[in-house]
Length: 565
View 1 (cartoon, rainbow, N blue to C red):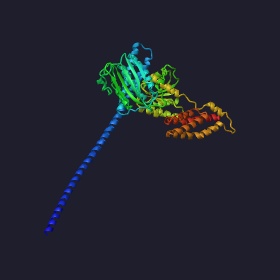
View 2: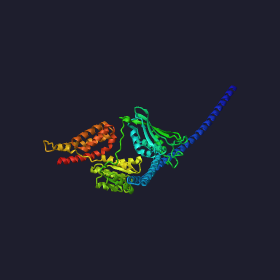
View 3: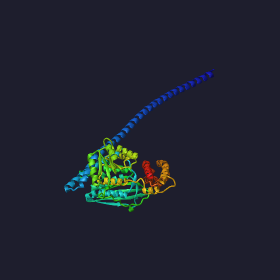
View 4: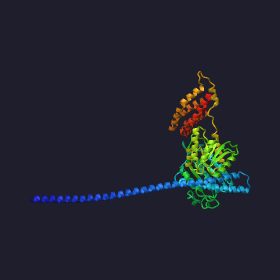
């Protein structure tokens, strides 16, 4: 019995131990569950806080974006409002300077021009800085001819440099390709800023432009552009903060030199946007060398600048083209200025209107060689007026009249709106007599009336007899009408889809068929489209597509009249 009792006692103790372990395990499990629950609650709370913070951050980000957009819109509006009267000031000053003046009067006009140009530069710098800060500055990639760019800058700035008693010299590496790929406008802007700075802080000295080839491979060239002067130089302390906004050297802040402290900051931002580097080497009292390095893509068919030819601009005193102009601008000063500028260019056939509705009425009543259309006008703005004019031309199968936008808002987005509305080009206020002259020359050459038919070929076909009652010209016209509309639609699909090879074949076929019938204007459109497609640039042919059907209808109508006669 004693053995059994001992065994029972041991079993009881074992059970008690197991029970105690189970209880402790249960308690541990409950503690663990409690801790897990607390942690889960904390995690949920953190998730809620994180979501709230994310919403706050998104709201703050959107607010910042909206603020940036509002800032850009505000400065763009201010830019337009400033540029419009500045156009009148600079334009009238230019016209005044071309008239006989005394030395004192000429000096007064020069002061007016210098002050207005300084104000204009400040406006442009503020606009550029705002776009850069908001991340809205976009590069416009295209052909870059370094030699031609420098030639242009020299022609532009050499009078200023000589006025300061300085000599301007150029040293350009002949190994640099004639045509590279980059943003020519921004490169020009940087160089002009650096050269103007060098000239401002140098007197009776030298400003030297150097362009060197740093690296050359199959697809790119790295070039270094330097502007060296023999001016006052910059201390090491000032060099360390020179490329920050609104920062100027101690001497640069003096009234003797003036400026805003924005130019170099904008230059640095533009170089950074182009993935390049910019810097300065200088010693106080011994001149400065500002430099920037860029890697630019190579274009096909490049030559070195050693064989490049400088393109000289047409002299403004050359005989002006005989053109009739419709001028639409609600600002009385600008209207008077542009009419004076046109008169100076020998253009006297000018009609002026004050809004878009009047522009449309004038367009319907008379044929113009060119339309100068202000962007912002009351009653109807320039964009809406342009759309209506293009619609009228399409409905009535008229030849397209070049329309040039005039506006003080020179942001790329506004230029795009003008192009989308159907305008042909863009001229930013204020503009000089030379700029206006070149714009008119450019579009007058492209707007010469084109004959719908080559009548010598048409008459040759018409004089050929057939065995039946119908003329050969009538039969060929029927065949042309049967086939051409469908082919035009096929061509449109190939162009839009980017099928360059198929587009080339169809455009060539349409061109040949049109030429054989003496259809001149339409065949030139097909030829242009064929060339774009051959070059793999079908997208450039898209604007020509809308002109095909009206040109086809005009050709068929003209041929029908000849056939009946």
